[in-house]
Length: 309
Length: 291
Image (cartoon, rainbow over all chains, first blue to last red; front, side, top):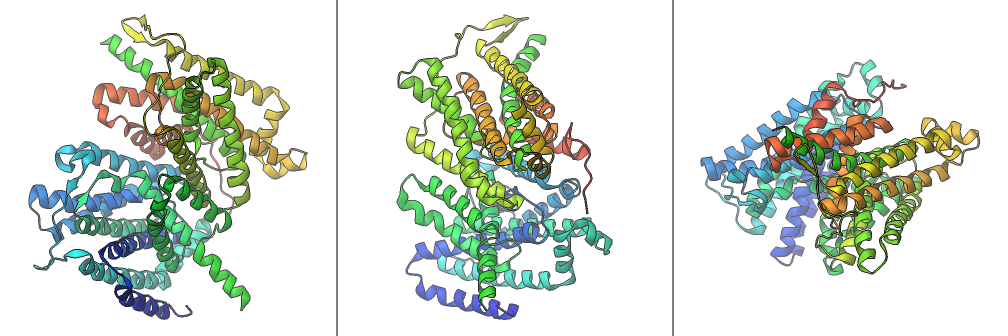
């Protein structure tokens, strides 16, 4: 993957060829979930991998989007697309409001604050049962775009594939822009980049808001795709899953995000056969991959290939 | 009115004492290794669940208690030896994920072994509440408070009077310098994991007769212990104790006066407010970053 475009072309070909290989709707569903996770993880990787800020509450933003697309059309008869936008703007505003105090924090204090944000959002979703249906969840009205409704796993597949391709392209452009260089400088050393004239606070804010916006949109689309949501979409464990995908795939690596999302979405499916041992196996795999490849899969293999050449 | 307030305060400091023990566990490991151990909550769970198991299998209470503290301590050492030590020098995020992986393994194993149903054993000295100014205090609450005070005092003696304790302090101040004056820092790491696992387990044992236990209590107890440690300012023992009590009180008062549904949210809102005004917690010292 020397030029970013060859990678994008490769991804596009895979996405085009995949429907020929997928035998039935069940596999399409898994592919869709992989794409959903990949897009959220791309956004989260910008925050964690490129800007170097831990966020343990990202599922909170995903949950805001999911519930916006459920509550606004159901209780206030908003059109679904307007609900998606409202959720995304709401999540972005929330991120914008809490970012300044949160990003004054560092390391574990930052982890604590973002974790708390996610937990509070999921508790609110659980408790406001009049609107959210409480812990039992609620049904989500389908998405309709200009009278078109995606029906079934296959039609949704094309929608998610298109969004994924666009997100990868947008991420790569962002990273190669002056904005992206500033972000990487910030990860290296905040003070040094400040000295070089990077407005640290503004960049952290912008990237956090952007990734909250994306997470919310994906939350909305996921809710409409599945047709039913529970507060679990916003809980601590989902946040951890997302962070794990970032780290296992490789921090600060666009294709790492995709690999992490694909592997960790497939893993629980593969572990179903272990009957009851899923949690243990999932935990063990997390530990092993972090111990032996602390930089994540894609950067580790990229480094190995580079050395051999 | 007053008796009601007193009642909330009683229940607040009782759970608060457990949070304080959990927070001390976080603090110990954080000081020795700069790792936030997200598996801390599982040690609390192990303490309670193991006691239930050993009592059920017919052991006397004293033997059950000793085993239910010793086994988590060994598990703590194993976690350090096989998960933390091999990943030395990894990123903060990677280390957090490793400890979360460890907690999933422990929780999953317990679920397979003991199932999902909640478990409990009878209080140490009966359930007859003591009445103080119109408020009822369960005898087990006194056990929790007394046990916590004893542990805090014992820790204080350990750190101020014994060579082993001072070695841990030296390592947390500067690991390399401690190594140079002959401290076995690897041993210190294992010690602090064993110690914080044992402290967590004791907290779990003492609290179980009041709140019951199950394979998944570790998640919330651990997170709230983390909140308590951060409220006080990561790395200070005094801060951990104060933070634990404060978190417990806020939670009980929220449940009593505002909404019991939102009591779990209260600690996390508290942490926002505190970090907003004091980015390093209540007792966290100022630190300067070297460029």
